Length: 222
Image (cartoon, helix red, strand yellow):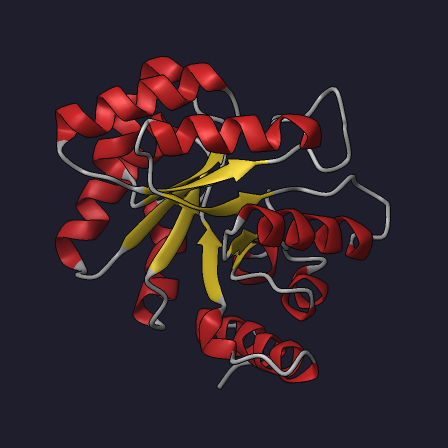
């Protein structure tokens, strides 16, 4: 097999997940690999589908709506996760298109999603995004606001699966992953969406259940 194919990249990531899980005495089957296909066209995505990948992540509702319906027509079992920020006015479209939403970060979005789920008759899993590094330029609720957000989401009957975070760039990510894992435990949540191409092995050792990998699977963006 050539050294750099969709098959070989996917196999390498799975091997790394297995090793990291073993280090933490975890079952690697408890870690879901989300292939982040934002900005990638259908021709770039198809080889990964052919290699067996079925779970994909997108940043924007419009971009996902433009390419995934056709891809889903030719392949069964595709699961789509929204991993980017979601505007409240796109809630209904997002609920119809995605199987999970990783960026629940404010009360107005809770009410928009609750209404959309009732209308569409579909309930995608939701992850509350936490601004784990308290960075003003990033989405996510403040750590101090998390208990209130969670209570509000639960009272609106949203299916909250866990927490999501993106640690600050250029800092060691392990302390932030450990903090997110502690927050999830304190909230009685099992899902942890954390870890990307550069740090997913660390995330797996600290309890990640969903890792969001783009560059390591697709190569650097043009």
